[in-house]
Image (tube, rainbow, N blue to C red; front, side, top):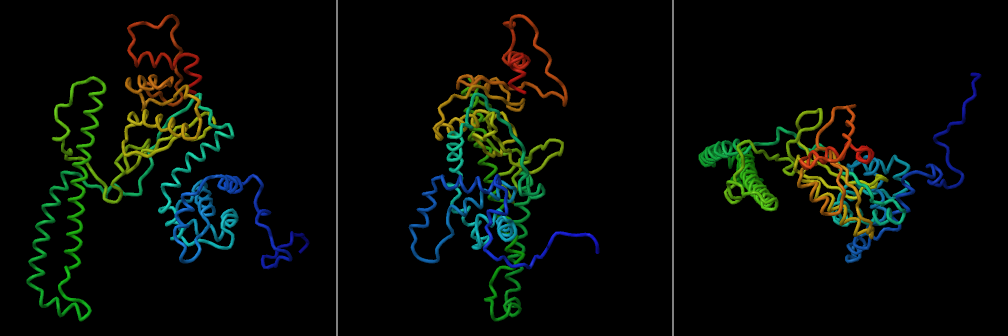
Length: 396
């Protein structure tokens, strides 16, 4: 063999202990996260462990937080996959060293400290503020449908629930009668390790199914009351007449559905993909693409998210010590309503909200010259505003 290759000896032992820092470039995300976590206040998480002095020493909270943030930021959500990455991924080994936490430990840490981990959002904003990244002259709000971990066929309508409840009641009654009639024979069949009076497995399944359907019916009824109450409050705030039916009299529509796997998700239309079980994820970001507020809602319509999301952004900025006012708010047509634009202006935010969806590649037509006609509606004024040179520049 005439070709010369580089030496390769995977079983070669190191003469000196290797340094993991030599295996990653200096600008790797894991170094930034380790330095960042060292500056964040994790005292509530430390306090949780310091109350209990018995048992084995727990994993260091900063290590666990750094591991979760790194893996979540690089697309790994599963606790089992995070554990596997700790065995094979150099960056994860940089965080945990040789003491690799079990997947259950990783999962329990997240669940136990969920509230504290959510509060880290404000701590990160504080760091961004110190770095000069939270200037909020202009912010943008957008949303996207995120598929729920639930299948559409696991949903059931309110109308079908009533039919299914009746059918299951009849089936449970029949099975109870059968169980009573065959009690003696079942005692012998079950053997000495069972008392013989347990419910048949089939009956237990149907009873649990019936209980779930009854729970879902109540959940849909409470949802209908809540939505009716919100609608009544909204109409009152807008000076409109109250709805024809009082909130207390509201009932679910026959086609209203609830998903047994993920009750908080809803059937939503996903762009170019039809309908699916989803949540509606929302985010507000500034010009440096720092996320100032984030949430997930079960409402498919974005219109109701404009004001709560901008209010959340303001609250997070205040908590981070950023007193600069939000100057302009950019939103697509899904957020437009006269109420939203008026309320944004009342909050001191200059709204640039599209009033209609343009086709792909279609440019906004130029604004007509001259004074703004006095007879324009609020929607026409907003459309005209986005057609100005400043409006096109801001919205772009």
